[in-house]
Length: 268
Image 1 (cartoon, helix red, strand yellow):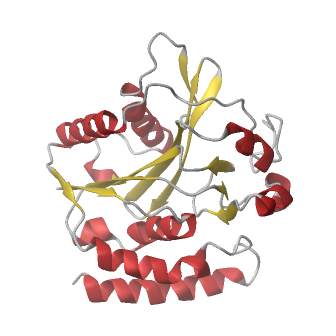
Image 2 (spheres, helix red, strand yellow):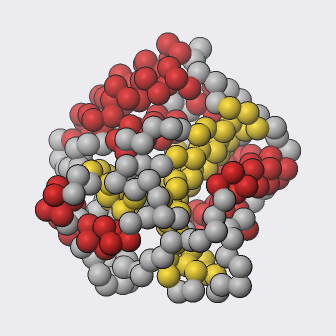
């Protein structure tokens, strides 16, 4: 059975920690499930990639003045601005369950094409770039990143639907393409996707992945206790935007061990 999770939580620290917990707890293996789909939104925030330089990516003064939270995700990719007009979608799947050769490029392309198939692009010119980004009429509407843990592959992306594009521009510092520097974000003009219907999009994605893997889809069990665990660790794990500095890894790993022990009490 494939699990579906629609989270009403909008705190970006809590949402990021839950994402991390879903991967690291090997939840799918525990429930003998091939995969999980997750939909959610965040309050205004900037999220930078795992190895990025905060001071080169984020206008911290602007973010502080406008109550925009800043955090670092555990996957790669570039910096993104999000608010409640930005939809987040995550695919977390056992790579052995997917009908393709599990290279990073194949996996990213597989998931980005699933999303692209059901977007209301009409007669617009649409393009996938770098296997993780979607452009409509030359402007970016979606960016994704990935993370592999054992046999599990996470691909998560954003969709700009009614995002405050002025705040997006002001909160991010990078304004060039930076093709020669893989750690820096690559600037692109952005736009919001119009005529998007969430319920229909979700139904189409769920039905497509269910048919592809010949699996039914149901809500994730034990979600509230899992959420309680992730919430209790949220500000410790991802509110600290310098957690990749020397000395932070050990602290992170200790927190992770404690968190997973709590999960073991829920799922036996």
